[in-house]
Amino acid sequence: MARVMNFNPGPAALPLTALERARDELIDFRGSGMSIIEHSHRGKEYEAVHDEAIALTRELLSVSDNYHVLFLQGGASQQFAVVPMNLLPSGKSADYILTGGWSEKALEEAKLIGQTRVAASTGENGKYTRIPRKDELKLDPNAAYVHMTSNNTLFGTQWFEFPETGNVPLVADMSSDFMWRKFDVNRFALIYAGAQKNIGPSGIVLVIARKDIVEGGRKDIPKIFRYNTHADNRSLYNTPPTFSIYLVRNVLSWMKEQGGLSAMEKINREKGRLLYEAIDRHADYYRCPVATDSRSLMNVVFRLPTEALEEQFVGEAKKKGMVGLKGHRSVGGIRVSLYNAVSVESVKALTAFMDDFIRSNGAKS
Image 1 (cartoon, rainbow, N blue to C red):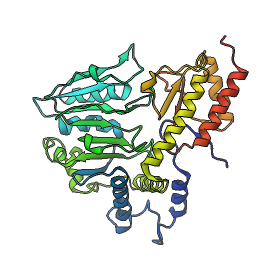
Image 2 (cartoon, helix red, strand yellow):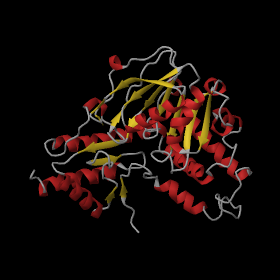
Image 3 (cartoon, rainbow, N blue to C red):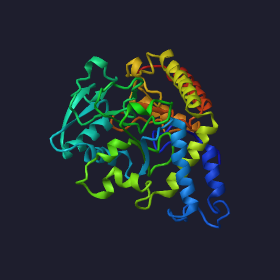
Image 4 (tube, rainbow, N blue to C red):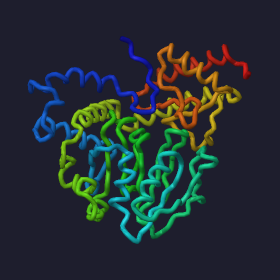
């Protein structure tokens, strides 16, 4: 069976090397006579994988010892609630920067926990086409934290320079662009990212949290939702999704073999360049609604002249082995997700298809 070119927004493409490793180890993990899925999370075989995944995260991102690296369940959506449960005490307020649908959902959950305010929003008529400028950020210097979403899968916008928040802790949902490049972790108090975009399968969320933030978190919430509970127990307080963490380990190992995050960034920028050049080459036909300086390198969105042509585009691309190109149901159009495991060759095949499609379907009627 031939593998397709997978442009899905998540769960997304995984490196073939990581999948082949899982295939080869699935029945008998390292001569143990059983699958990694069958191993106890308290056993030395699984714990070695668990610790390796944490160590690789630290190595790839140069995470210092004053941060915890945690594997948690519930995905990024659960973190929308867990962040304010831990970090928003009574009498304080949290700032939220709205740049898309996921940041809106994070704010909705935080409102149920405590006081919040919108520090900036680029949404107009329900659409977000850019990242806010520095002068648009109205930050509260007394806020408990500032929350941002680094990349917006629905609307195709991305932060390339993170906001300055002074002494206020910066919290980021990096689910859809985590580890696309190297960045300074020390700029953040807490980062969370669902794995199913760039670093693994669904079912696990990776959290990098400064130790003082974790230790100072609220204690009047259930233990299972406290960051310090999981930090004190090395993310083994309860049974974690062991196979998901195992696959994260495989993906991080692959990333290291590719040359680390500097190599990932070079490849990702090349993929973005190729695709945006193809769009701009036919700007009267492939219309990207995103401000040029906010264009995401992870999720590229564009429209065709009609919805009928968009449906035709998706259908014909699928016949050529390119899948996952339909835009989110709330916004429509085309969305191309260029996560780490998507190859430059796949993007070249897509851009060639785009050129061919316009030659055959150039009329705007």
